[in-house]
Length: 155
Image 1 (tube, helix red, strand yellow):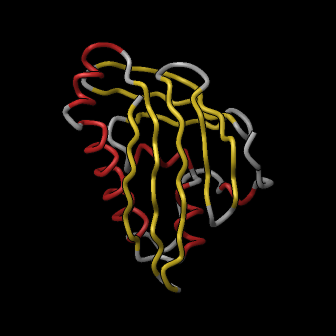
Image 2: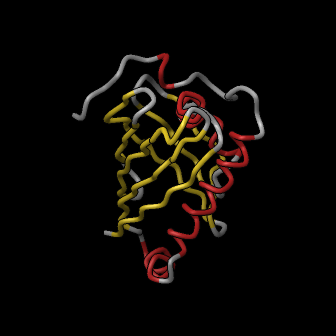
């Protein structure tokens, strides 16, 4: 099991950072290798990724949702992983977004890539692209935000 922690400061208010992050359907616009994220219900997301020519599909369950604070998830099938994204208000216009991810890479190639830091590099790149994405838009885009659903506590 590998643990990855990466952060980025985005120059948007915390509400906008949270609202954009929780519009999961927009993930393909800034996450490398993510082809589709589809909301199945209020707590389940279906993912389709294509990385190094390999397509994978899996479901993840949102286990905690606190508007403007955090969203956590765990995989239901596919690669075993869980994580949390937290949002920290630095000032009225700046938010720190931190991703903590625990993942158990599948197969020899994934494990080798993990040992070489490929997963950390991917998360770091996704956060940089999220920064560009959220800062370049006046309003969040793609799907409905997590705040439109009731808060969840850890299950």
